[in-house]
Structure formats: structure tokens, C-alpha cells
Image (tube, rainbow, N blue to C red; front, side):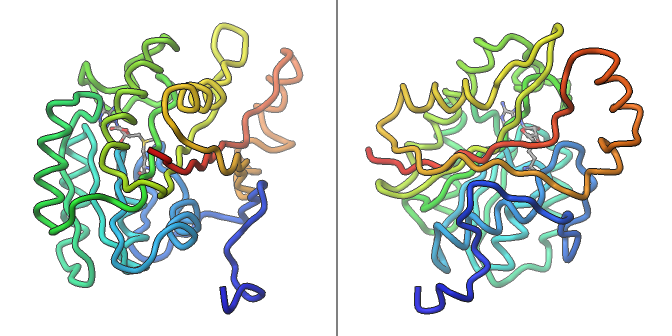
Amino acid sequence: MENWKDTDINVDSLWLIGERDKTGKHSNIYHGNFIPQIPNQLIRRYTKENDVVLDVFMGSGTTLYECEKLNRNFIGFDINKEIIDFVASQMAECNNIKFHINECDVTNKGLFDIAIKNSLQNINFDKVQFLIAHPPYLDIVKFTDLEEDLSKISDINLFLDKFMQAMENGLQYLERNKYFAVVIGDVYKKSEVIPLGFYVMYALKKKFKIKLKGIIVKNIEGNRGKLGMGSIWKYRALKSDYFLFKHEYIFVFKKEF
Ligand SMILES: C[S@@+](CC[C@H](N)C(=O)[O-])C[C@H]1O[C@@H](n2cnc3c(N)ncnc32)[C@H](O)[C@@H]1O
């Protein structure tokens, strides 16, 4: 707080980000990854050095590389073994933080409990101090062929059941009065918008004793080329009756149980 006037921690609910940070280990090779600026902002705001960050859908390790940069310890899971192996190879040289990553179906309570106890023991902690979840957005981007992969699910109710199970599993290990964030977007199916982000936020609010601290809308201005004014997408949107998705949500909560 001593430097509050100079900090670049963004306290606005609208994050317009110029372009993706591609420095260091961020190679942008994984379709469906998020931009490093998201975990960077959240980790700096909600954790201290040497805290443990848990990413329950870690994908290509974006959060882990930010933890390495910011001296935070890390536990991460994903169902995709190939990507876990890739991240492990990227981290072969790391010696400033403790981290443990593992292949795990985070919707399965039995498997999750075994995996996280093992990880916590490995890095010598009892609990985590921040949790981040960036799940698939229904079946919009397919990640693996595994039955338990959330990106196989097209039914919203089934998706919500499984996602909430994953969050219950993870939240058990988050210290009380600490924060967690869910990064998610909406989807368009059968000619209408499914507000997946709002469903997820509401389901979380209903199920857990938590406080909603922020609904951040994030847009990467650098996406203009793909979805911008001159593209075929503009033509398609105008020809039909829909809008082009550009933004995603970051829901920030405080755990009070
Ligand atoms: C949107 S991506 C996360 C990307 C990550 N934030 C990054 O920057 O690379 C969602 C991830 O969830 C994983 N996933 C899907 N179902 C899962 C499950 N049941 N258990 C664990 N991971 C799962 C996918 O393999 C995918 O890597």
C-alpha cells in the first residue's frame, strides 16, 4: 500500500489489454489458454511472496510461469497428460519456487484428494492461499478425448454439476478468508447466447459461503484483426442477428468458510 499511487495493479472492472504478454516461457502454443496478464494481476493483488497458488485447470502453465516470475509456489492439475509433460519440461530449470503439477481429473473427489495431499506434502504446505479456475467453455474448444474432460460436455446442467464438483474439491484446500477467481466466457449455441459465465457465478454464490468481490470484463484489443471491422465475422454477424464475442469474465470471490 505504500506505493499505491504508482502501482499498475488494475482496480477497474474493465480490463482492456493491449496485447498478450509473450515474454519468457509464454509461448501461446495451447489453444484456449488465457493471457498471462490475468494471473499476473490476480496473483500480485491477492497473494504474497511464498504463498501457494492452486490452478485446477492449469493447461499450458500460464499461471505457473507467472508464479515463477513473482516468487509464488504453485500446485497445478490438468486432465491432459501431454500438456502437463510439456509444462514439466519448461520448468526443468526452475529453482526459485516450489511447485508440483500432476495429471488429475479434478471433478473426481477421490482422485483430487489424493493428488492434492500428495502435492501439498511435496511442497511442504497444508493449504493454498489462492485458487484460480479457467475451465473449458462447454465444448467450444476440445482439449482431449477423455470422457471426464469438461470440454466434452455440451449440456449446460451437466457442465455446471461437474464444474461445481471441481470447485468444491479445490475450495476445501483454500485457506479461509482468502480469494479465488474463475475465468470464463459465454458461448453461442443453437442460435442463442448461453450466458455460461453468469450461470457459473450464480451457482457458486448459491452453493458456497463466499462473497463476490468483482466481475471484471476483459478484452484484448489485439484481437481486432481476427474479429474486427473488416473480417468475415463482421459480415456473418450482420447477415445474421448476433454479436461477436470479444470479452470474457473474471469473477473474484472471497472464501468465508
Ligand atoms: C481453458 S483451458 C485452461 C488453459 C490455461 N489457463 C492456460 O493458460 O493454458 C481448460 C483446461 O481444462 C482441462 N480440463 C478439462 N476437463 C478437466 C478435468 N475434468 N480435470 C482437469 N482438467 C480438465 C483441459 O485439458 C484444459 O487444459
